[in-house]
Image (cartoon, rainbow, N blue to C red; front, side, top):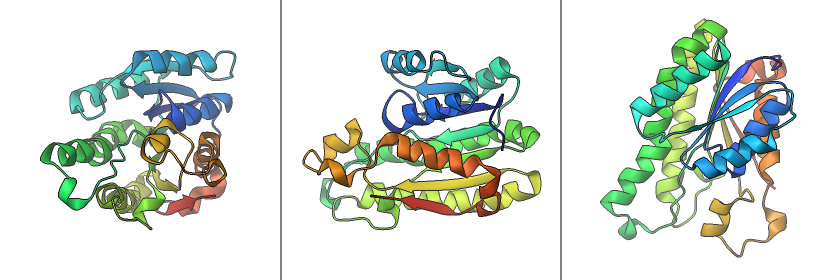
Length: 233
């Protein structure tokens, strides 16, 4: 896919991996609607995109509310005249043992890691059908190799992989490609909140994940739709 002049929505784009993805796509000439819950973070993302070939527009929204998801997809199409790429990056990564999982923690994790992905894919599908576009759902290496305390997180990311594979089958006759991208540890605030002592040389940089997203959108990855790409240090 030639990214110049195309349009994307990136969720969780206020910082970390999502910000890196939004900036890399804008650097490649895409116009990006950057979605997150914190206006201050989004403002910084948009500021860092200043002078890039593509523009980044901030949009404050809660991805767990279907009506807000529908609203930001409509805005992207209205602002850019099209939608070619959806990156579902927003996520929650609780570290807890099974007997520590409360009802509210379960509901919150499912809302961000599962329901929000369904909402965004469902809402963007008509526009992506018109553009013969692509979806990249950010998963995790924890889906393949979870460890004690990450059962809830790893389980939801395994769901993302299966959902992406099934959606790729639906999208194939429509020209829509769907991928799942599962990074290992990435140097973000989310990582440091859970693993403050992890050596820095064992973590990917956010832009390394963003580079993998850009590669999946390239025509050379055309025949990998439905697969999960894992990357790690």
